[in-house]
Each structure stands twice: as structure tokens, then as C-alpha cells.
Amino acid sequence: MSTKPKILVTHKLPETVQDYLNLHADCTFWNEEGSMPRSVILEKVSDAEGILGGTIDEELLSFAPRLRVASTSSVGYNHFDLDAMRAHGVIGTHTPYVLDSTVADLVLALMLSAGRRIAELDAYVKQGKWQKGTSGTELFGVDVHHSTLGIIGMGRIGEAIAQRAVFGFDMNLLYHSRSPKKEIDERFNARFCELDELLRESDYIVVMTPLTPETKHLIGEEQFNLMKSSAIFINASRGATVDEQALIKALQQGKIRGAGLDVFDIEPTPVDNPLLHMPNVVTLPHIGSATARTRNDMAELAAKNLVEALNGGRAYVVQELKDLVPN
Ligand SMILES: NC(=O)c1ccc[n+]([C@@H]2O[C@H](COP(=O)([O-])OP(=O)(O)OC[C@H]3O[C@@H](n4cnc5c(N)ncnc54)[C@H](O)[C@@H]3O)[C@@H](O)[C@H]2O)c1
Ligand SMILES: O=C(O)[C@H](O)CO
Image: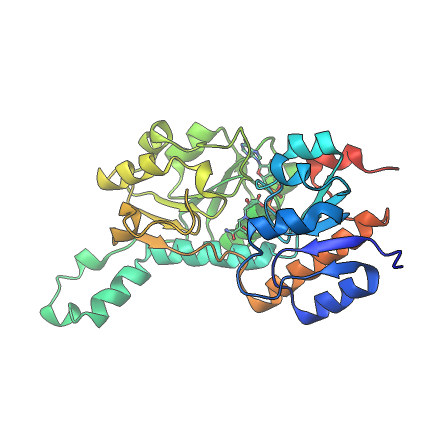
């Protein structure tokens, strides 16, 4: 009989990562597209000590009496019910650092695209509108270089965005986070400020906090009312950090100039979401970390986290559950 821990993997992994897991665990894989259906997870998790992927909630935990570690191949872990995991003594791990640059690249792309109207004007050319003649001014956008960028949530990805914005585009940097960071101030000649001040002063506003009870709807009607009418608003964190209805209203009423969104309240977002029908809004299907190399790195790290945490080794355990790790 195998002495390796039993693990359940609920989405397809690269072959090399499966090979690694097979060396260290008795694995049940899912090799079809999409994720393992919930009913199958609930059935197969009954004897698992580790799980890689998916939502961890009270229901799943009640079907998993032997579960010790849940690993997610994402840095965000708002799909972990942390209270329930604590109550069941289950450790959670995630994948910080390996995706910072890829997500930061995408945020800059959203800023450039929304600010300089790339997607909108690409359609303009392809639809033959250019041929009809233009005064020119109607095609104007908002400069990225030498504008003021306000980053809300100056963590790992926030810092990678700052690096690109300050050194690549000569932007001035404001940030709001849980606390000021001296090294950020010095390195980027940046200034920590309260949220209201950041919203009033920034030309580009990027939300990059995790989704937690404190950050849910951090940006709503009151916050949009403080922004410049020329502001470009970017969300690449989680949809629910922003009150989506308030964002729609702010755009409809011209309270801000445009937006770039990688994340939505409901994903996939319904096709009748008004945001999808506004030319000044650039929309993406939650692809912040979606390059082959980065997704492979995330899968490798998630697998390593699972094996290490099951064996008492070093893993990226989520902050809120670190005290559950035996010394
Ligand atoms: N769009 C995507 O594909 C994509 C990819 C990766 C990460 N994300 C999201 O980005 C988030 C951030 O990732 P990270 O690795 O930079 O995390 P991080 O923990 O390094 O940084 C988050 C920062 O937000 C700050 N913060 C937390 N609560 C706050 C609050 N109430 N007010 C102000 N600041 C607050 C923290 O102090 C921290 O500095 C993830 O949790 C995830 O939800 C999205
Ligand atoms: O949190 C993350 O890592 C990204 O959103 C990918 O899901």
C-alpha cells in the first residue's frame, strides 16, 4: 500500500507538473478542459489529504475529513473560506511573486489602451470611419507619460507596475496601501496618501488590492465622484473591489473618462453588461497572468506548495492561516 499522501487535482496541469506530483503523492488528476465538476470533487475529496485548485468552503470541507492542505494556483485566494479552513485545521497555500511582472505588463497595456484609445480606434480604422474624415481632435487621448498614477494596494504587483510606470513612462506616483512604505517612496520618488487624495489627484487610477471584507466595494459612487473627469480607471484585482453599478453610472455620466478592466463582478461577465458596450472601456477576460510561461510557473509553485506543506516543508502559506503550520 502507498504511503504517499492522497491528493486531488481539480483542473488540468502541465505534464511535467503531473510527473512531479506523481513522485510525491498518490494523485487523482482531472485531464479534461475546464474544472472538475463540483459533484465529482465532493465525491473524490473524501479520502484526500491535499487538494490543488478551486473553491474551498464549508460544504467541501465537510466532505473532506482527512484534508490538511488546500493549494491554489493563483496569488489571490478570496475563493478560500478562511474561517471554515481554520475551523477544520486546513492550511491554504498560494502563488505569490511568479506572476508579478506578467500582471504588471497587462496593467500597463490596459492603461495605454484605455488612455490612448487603442481598442476603440483600432475598430474605428477597421470599420472605415477614418475614410470619412476627421478634425483630429476627436481622436485625442490622455497622455501616459508624465501623468500621475495612483496605485491602490502597493504590494508585489503594485510595485512591478510602479517600476514600469516610473522608469518606463516617467509617471509621477501616488499610492494608497495599508501603510506607507519608505523603500517605495525612495525608490520611485513616490508619495503615500489617503484614498480620497489619491482619487482627486490621479490621472490614472489602478486598483491592485486583494479582495477581502475590507476591500469589497472599496471604490463606489462616493469615490468615483472624487475622481477627475479625465481620469482613466483600471481594475485588475478582483471585480468586487469595485461597485460595478457605480462604475457604470460614473462612465455613463462622464464622471471619469474611461476604464480598463480585467476583472468583473460575475465572470464570465454577461454579454448585456453595459460596460461591454462602451467604446471608452477596454475589457479583458481575467487574463492578468495568462501567458504560457507564467501559468506554468504558477502550476509548478502550486504543486510544490502542496507537497511541501503536506510534508512539513516550506510553502507559501496564506498570511491568515500561517499560525496553523506546525513549527
Ligand atoms: N487580474 C489578474 O489576473 C490578477 C493576477 C494576479 C493577482 N490579482 C489580484 O491582485 C491582488 C494583489 O496581488 P499581490 O500579489 O500584489 O498582493 P500583495 O498582498 O502583495 O499586495 C496587496 C496590497 O494591497 C494592500 N491592501 C490590502 N488591503 C488593503 C486596503 N483595505 N486598503 C488599501 N490597501 C490594501 C496590501 O497592504 C498590499 O500592499 C491579488 O490578491 C489578486 O486578487 C489579479
Ligand atoms: O490571483 C491570481 O493569481 C489571478 O487572478 C489568476 O487567477
